[in-house]
Image 1: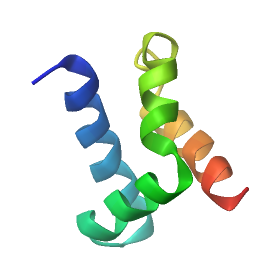
Image 2 (image 1 turned 180 degrees about the horizontal axis):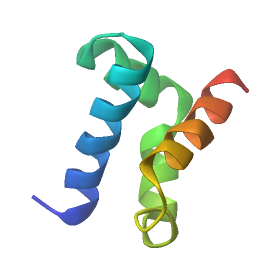
Image 3 (image 1 turned 180 degrees about the vertical axis):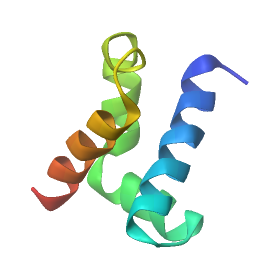
Image 4 (image 1 turned 90 degrees about the vertical axis):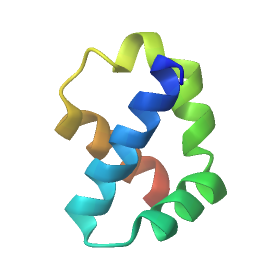
Length: 64
């Protein structure tokens, strides 16, 4: 498993926990909203940031 994959799973768990939704629902939401591409494209920059900040950024993308 790559570092990006591990970090993606971590963010799914963080997002799921914050919003009280299932991992499956979070996965589907991330897929629908292009969050996997966001994580992959920005991994080098975001993986060193505070996870609460990154989850907030993801929340902004999801909400549009």
